[in-house]
Length: 192
Ligand code: ADP
Image 1 (cartoon, helix red, strand yellow):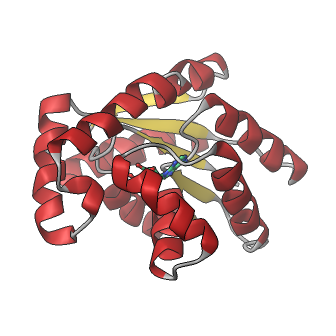
Image 2 (spheres, protein in one colour; image 1 turned 180 degrees about the vertical axis):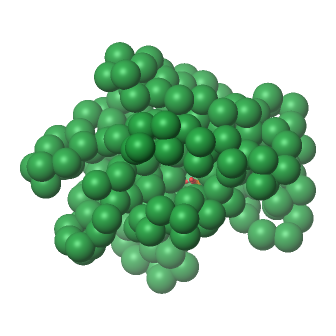
């Protein structure tokens, strides 16, 4: 199986690149942000609870997202591999993911990081907020909180995966096609 973790701050372009990667490598896309937003839209108990945190740009509890990912993995027994987008976001989530995949006799193949500076991120998120209507994209304070959550809780995952020899970084600035080509090169380097 090819199991990829896409890594990068909010606005780095993980969703855009995932769409291209799933097509090329025939992977199942698991985005915790998308799953949470569908729970919010369906007004489930989980969605109502998560909404407050998401609107403030704060991470939802580990146990919630780990449970969601676990059931999505189980729901796709024939998958050739997965792209994890927006997950794991904490060390606890990364450890839980390793355990879940181990139970399926598979593992993370690599973590692909999209590198984009803070100034460019804020610009992209505010622009996205204008047409997406996402409450967490429309306010600079909330964006700052998300970037701060990323720097304190998520950035340490770089060393986690470096320690496992699985970390690879590509520049997240440039055209969508150029960035995609860099990602594909990094993947092909480990699969051929
Ligand atoms: P972004 O576009 O900022 O990368 P996402 O769409 O992935 O964000 O997620 C939006 C919000 O959903 C996050 O700010 C957070 O509140 C919540 N969320 C998504 N994934 C996770 C996760 N793995 N752990 C905790 N919270 C999460």
